[in-house]
Image 1 (cartoon, rainbow over the protein chains, first blue to last red):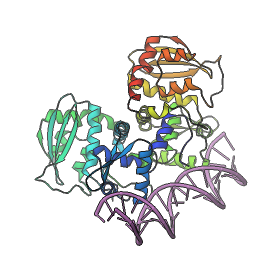
Image 2 (cartoon, protein in one colour; image 1 turned 30 degrees about the vertical axis):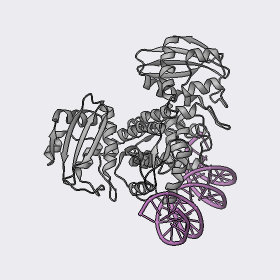
Image 3 (cartoon, helix red, strand yellow; image 1 turned 120 degrees about the horizontal axis):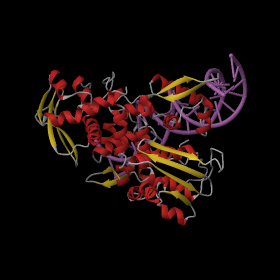
Image 4 (tube, each protein chain N blue to C red; image 1 turned 90 degrees about the horizontal axis):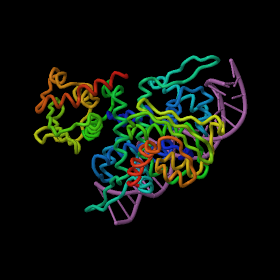
Length: 214
Length: 214
DNA sequence: CCGCATCCTCATGGATACTG
DNA sequence: CAGTATCCATGAGGATGCGG
């Protein structure tokens, strides 16, 4: 199995990152370098032997590198592996119609995944200046900082401290799928602090336009 | 198996198009709608039962639709399925360092795959005006028409008529991987007819910059 | 605990044969 | 031509073991 034996960029990409779990490992490493146990926690259901094997392959192919850390090691993307960010971003943007239906039963949710999704939408909107938006909903309170150099999403320390949120409500659903404007968010009980015009520019028009293809 | 059960655009995308062969089926349909037998021919090594199953799933998920044709039917992408073009394009651009090594032993090559790759590079370069370039090399003669509305690559009828080229030489290798400038092409014996500046703009700088991350 | 390696079961993929 | 049906090899998923 393994290789398609085709001289084609798509086929060769799939030879490299097309195996099950591989692209989700990359997703985790796009947020920050991770220890083995962090990857296990971020990939619900993965078998540890499989994860170990994938990491070996990714290192062999020059996509991931292993770095020494105090007590143990961490896995990080190489510069080339970092280039997969735009691949994941295009997947996230394409998937908006499928995400707009909200989480399915038994779907898990991690705040880190929202981070990647925001990057994808913001890269698409090509925000020209820095802005900060705070969003409060039933599950947690996020502070989103967006600018030309990148995006940061952090949970407010005064809110719930757990990293994992299960069964997110409609607000986080809509936020992650990018189909809500700030006014619609307010109508659903959210409190938005910050530059409302900038928030709308990021989540409003572009995201709504994308969902029309559904 | 099947689903990752994660509320994440990457994971849900992979639930939809992450199975083996699925994205290569999409690649074939991005060129033009295809009959079942055309898909079999365009996907060397695929099992017909697997292809049949994938097509059923893609229709169920709204990515592919079946259309009636004279004697039989053809498979075509839905508008949403067409949106995967940018996903494949980002894969092709990311894969340039891996493609630059040239075809591996037993790699097959179809001219249609070059078509998709050119689309990816041209979308990246965001060519502002239409241009036509003809490229002659040992294996075949292509006429490339590029413009804001898209790209067309066709084999010149006076050249070899077969659609499939096996074991392409270094010229097609370099062309598909996007690492050659027009002068380097000429140095390897290629004849380039048309707007050399435009050709360089398309294949030169941007592609070379991308290979630096290798 | 972290970072795997081993073992086992079963779903999936690959190759071939066959049918409307 | 356009798929189904069948069989077998492979890889995924899950539990467990084990050295540092």
